[in-house]
Amino acid sequence: MKGLVQYSLNINGKLLDLSEPQVMGILNVTPDSFYSGSRKQTEDEIESRVRQIIGEGASIIDIGAYSSRPNADDVSPSEEMERLRKGLSVIQRVAPNAIVSVDTFRADVAKMCVEEYGVGIVNDISGGMLDKDMFATVAKLGIPYILMHMQGTPQNMQQNPHYDDVVKEVFMYFAEKVQRLRDLGVKDIILDPGYGFGKTVEHNYELMNHQEELLDFGLPLLVGISRKSMIYKALGITADEALNGTSVLNTISLLKGANILRVHDVATCVEVVNLIQKLLAK
Image 1: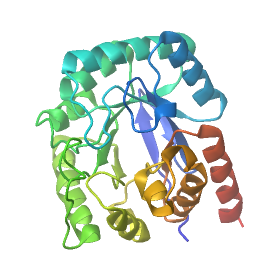
Image 2 (image 1 turned 90 degrees about the horizontal axis):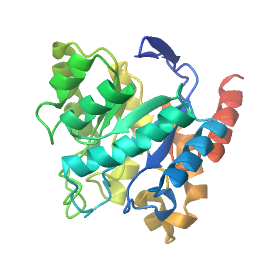
Image 3 (image 1 turned 120 degrees about the horizontal axis):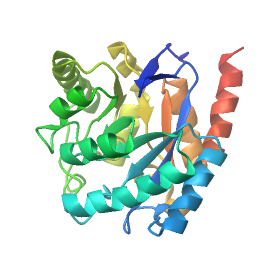
Image 4 (image 1 turned 30 degrees about the vertical axis):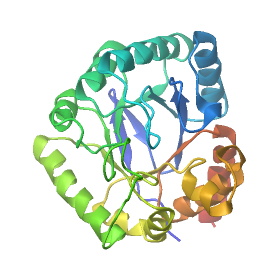
């Protein structure tokens, strides 16, 4: 069992304390995210979701306009920006003080969100692999960066993922990229093991079994396993039925050092965090 290391993130000049786990609520302004219940497209749907995320106790809203589910259709940068502008405008109106993370692998999209809407975190599923300008852009913007591990691209990552040693390879991936980010002057880096991104069900569980080893980097960890295939395929159910399994794996992730949980079901996750905090306080 791992107690949480004391971390904080500088977000637009204010510190977000990670000494207690934080919940990140997912806002998908897409028509094709893998979990149909998360798709929000109209302004009314987006507003309702923003109010739900904040009302149920999340401290971060993670907005994404490019579905990263396996075999998802590609979306042009202009379409991604248009969707994000609609969603971010609603957030500014409904929850102007909310901490917002943008889920994008495109440097220009990230730059637009930060400069036009004050977005405080960039969440890049590709770890800089899909846009060579991302690391330099994040460094120039001076904001926290979520560095995720992914093998392949959203279009091909699940076709035949292969590792000789998934834990070692993910660790080495982070070692190289963290050094590059540090060399550019990026101060706040969050690691995301990338469960479900270019990994079989077995790879995911092997990685989670060793998740605490990532704490050796001395950086906060984000875990996003909400309703993913590592749950519903393992149990022979659907994403709609995977809430209980999500809570189980979120619990394990917290005990293995996770600082941020990225979820669809905020209220349920807040309960998990509160119970784990009770346990770790004893």
